[in-house]
Amino acid sequence: MNADSRFGLQKLTLLDYPGKVACTIFLHGCNFRCPFCHNASLVVVPQDQSAMISFDELKDFLSKRGKILDGACITGGEPMLRPDLADLLELLRSCGLLIKLDTNGSFPDRLQDVVERRLVDAVAMDVKNNYAKYDETVGVSGMADRVKESAAYLRSAPLDYYELRTTVVRQFHTVDDLAELACEHAGTTHYFLQKFKDSGDLLGAGLSAMPDDEMARALEAVREFIPNAQLRGVDAPETDS
Image (cartoon, rainbow, N blue to C red; front, side, top):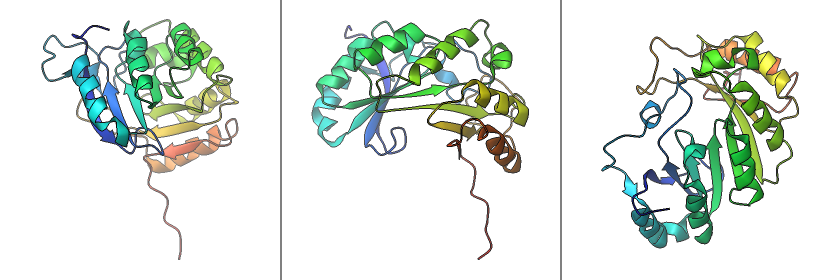
């Protein structure tokens, strides 16, 4: 990795790596064009990278703050697009950090490579929809088989933790769609239905969340195939005291 490589950095998070004090490193560039992407500004590599930190600045940060961190989260964009990803992971490893990788699952060979080399400890993979609706949902064609291969690999991969997750958008998902998705991924250990939130930084317009009561019905349908599935971003229902 050369010193010109640059990243976005959140210096401290208690959310991105559950149970860990971590930093989050944002990598620009993505091969998907999901209209509901909440990090649309990361989809294309910007010409002006002055607001991001350099590789040398990242090393300096880790040398000073690494001792208070348990881990680092690598997200995007799609990290697997970066030819220098392994160098970044090796730097984080040299600092004694646990590493969580976020991915869209479209590069199964690259995913397997970094896992088998023990460069990551945890993986969070987005599964955007059932396979019949994948192209429509991600805005590009030919990705369903790649995602299927990545998901199958994760079910037996040598990892401390992995999860699959789906951001649920009313314009793209129905309860039946999500039940079909869950059937396709039966055997997954950790699966989450995430409520869509408009970040104000989207590729598409006119998008909205599935109502909470419908999300609850979707969870019930999903649990027929993935019993431990959970919701994220949905308020717990009120109970009588």
